[in-house]
Image (cartoon, rainbow, N blue to C red; front, side, top):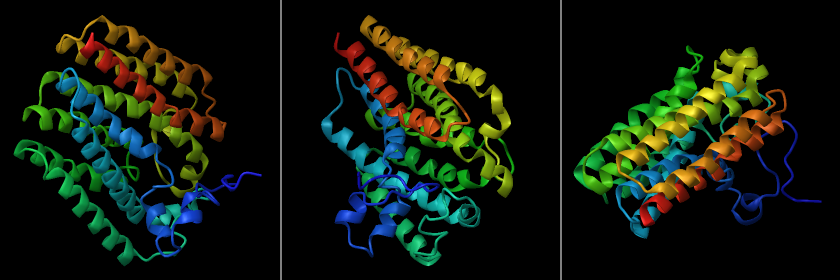
Length: 305
């Protein structure tokens, strides 16, 4: 039997690498930062990688790739810490999230705040490697990071705020390479916004019933059975705007050829979605890392050829 089998009704894995290799006192902090669930880091990172690849033909330096990788890991953890601090009472009422470090009482709010400060300092250390315009652009994103968790209390569209937050790297990446933000970067940012609306609506369907009980709003509740129809719009705009970003910097035809594969992946997500199947929703949500790799490959192909 696998030692990483998922416990029923919880998003905490049992017997994973954290349980096997990390000292017990450190484990809650890694789980608070969601290091045991890297999909969020990938989804935050790829708009950064797309942007720097689009901005620096034929290929950006591996050092930039590494810096953005570290930055995404740290800032995704910081965002999760902010989210859990804001949602502690809600998470305690939702079966899937009740065992997280804060609602379960494994760590205190003071410990979480101190951990957040450490993560922000590490993120600042990465940001200071860039030019002044990029530093200012990165700092501007903190307003979204700290306010996002509260939108679900009064709007059915918190996923829109998440889209603005999670795709900031599309602007930051271009700012790092060029010291400015060009129309291609804005198109890429807009594409990421609609991409996030799609994948996070799918993700939110896992908690739809619990969210109703505790009074949390989401696009999953707002769109309901019409989610599939809206995914055609969200993902259609995603592909169109990525194509526009490539057009604005005159990428060659292989970019569009590979982009078709990305569009096919979005179609697959849309037609196979079952909003009442929690495991299906989670699988489709996680599959977006493959979509992200396809888009990165499309940009590289368009730059090289």
